[in-house]
Length: 331
Image 1 (cartoon, rainbow, N blue to C red):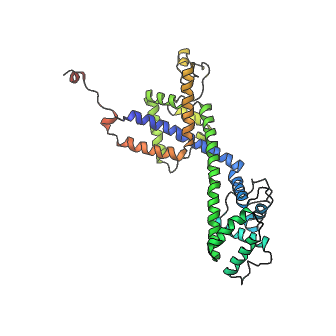
Image 2 (cartoon, rainbow, N blue to C red):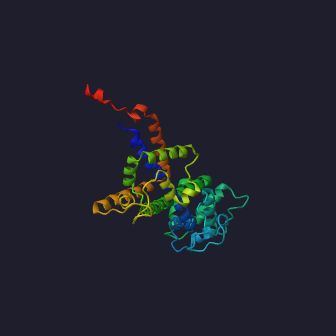
Image 3 (cartoon, one colour):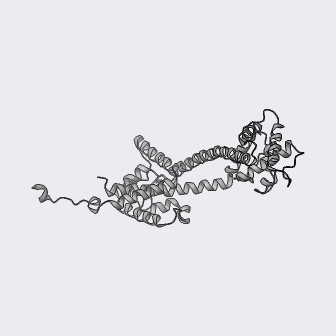
């Protein structure tokens, strides 16, 4: 029978993973604010789309176009991306690339003239692409898009926007991969520094009903909130907050603490292991915590809700089955 004690232990562990995942996400967002990976990834994606590895060709012209310059402060400096936009609307991209190629490779054409028809615009752009250097990656990408548009300028813009969106999906993949690596590094660091040993926490919660009760009451509070964001005190001192939720064995204790008996120190969950097998178990618990944190706060929040629903459906008799009397057992 899947008793409530097992559910309570699982819920307590999930709550810890949820809080630490939120802290990892907050730290990662702080890194993103400083490093601005989205901007650098977008610029790198454009360089690959245009075949401009030197930062000085079409990419520079693209970022210096008035439609794109309006999206960021300062000037475009090759190799420096901190001031660049992290997102470009697809419509802005298509208008910019059409205007840029026509003005660069067919300067005599007036694509913005009032009397210029959609058919003229399509023809101007086709001629501009034809005038691009042979072997150009951008020319190779534009030619099939022009053919697919079938003389329809509106459809041509839609094809260019679809091409841009497809390329940005790959850029998003770069960002997600880097984010997973960063969160994994942060999670492993937190688990090691704070001694968040999943195996030790499970054993502790299994033997400490008070800690389980405190964590379950905290879960009820988290579920009642509109979102799962930690408070300021939890972010400033996460280990202290978690330890207050029933005295969980977090942190490292390397020597006898003031007021602590030597016997209590020998049985302190936070004391480093003294055997090789103990260190293997400790390493396994910390690595499991680090892996759990890479799954992200949304995963743990959803799982927490599912476990609480299961817990609420367990009948009272199932939560604490009555023990048979000795008389009844002897009959």
